Amino acid sequence: MSERTWVKSERQVQRERVRRNRAVRSGTVATVSTIAFLGVLAAVVTGSPGWPRVRETFFDAEAFARAWPDVLAGFWTNVQIFLIAEPIILVLGLFVALARNLRAPAFFPLRALAVAYTDVFRGVPTILVILLVGFGIPALGLQGAPTDEITLGVVALTLSYGAYVAEVFRAGIDSVHPSQRAAARSLGLSHGQTMRHVVLPQAWRRVVPPLLNDFVSLQKDTALVSTIGVVEALRQAQIYAASTFNYTPTLVAALLFIALTIPMARLTDHLAARSQRRRGA
Image (tube, rainbow, N blue to C red; front, side, top):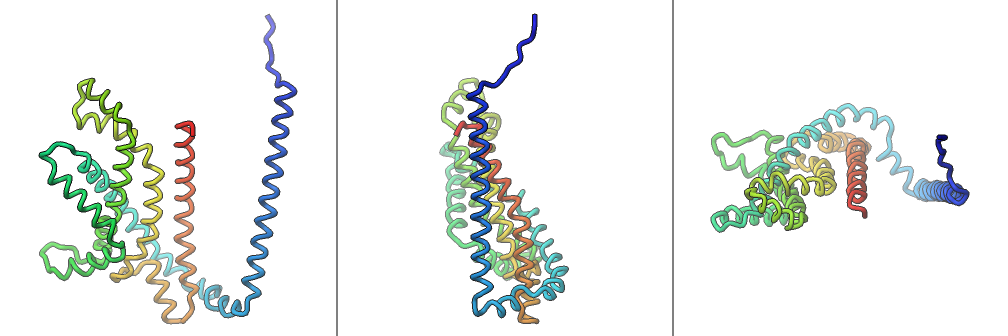
């Protein structure tokens, strides 16, 4: 018995050819329009009367090379703060979200405390939280209280971003259909087992993209700890700018932040698109 070889129909071949031609045409138009836009933008900027002064102040190659090593070393401090704060924020946010989902009357004080925490720290700007923690805790003079600026910065960022992450987790938990909980309880699972084995795994997959968005913001906001004396990338750039009256070092800091946040942003887009495909959107 001879094997039959599947062959595309003429209509299918023609349809694929049309799609390829359309994709090539769209890519060509997009490329040409982008090049034209960037060319016009560059011409407008470089042709402006103040461009020579801006180029000297913000795009000085010599100042860039001189500031690069120290700003890069300061940026490592930003990365360390981010890596320390991120897991603590995840744990704190999850705990607060779970506390807000406790419905038993005996847990009302814990639920009220969680609501108050999210309302307060989402309402206060992050920079104010950093200033209050960075200068307020040492001023109390409590025995064992941290006095290191980096530690205080991590505490402040954790308090501020923990409130946002808690709301992300709570939204993910609430997005799981109530029938999932009802089915789990009907099988004899307790509330804790239902959350652990049924609700949280589904919620976690749904909240990964918004969580990554929050962590992109967190990475940028690590620069705010410079207000309490931490010498990180922004502070190092400011030191150079103050001594030379040249702001090219701030461009160095900006490029370092961009180099880290853009891959995280693209990963967020990828995970969001994959989540939509799984749901058939």
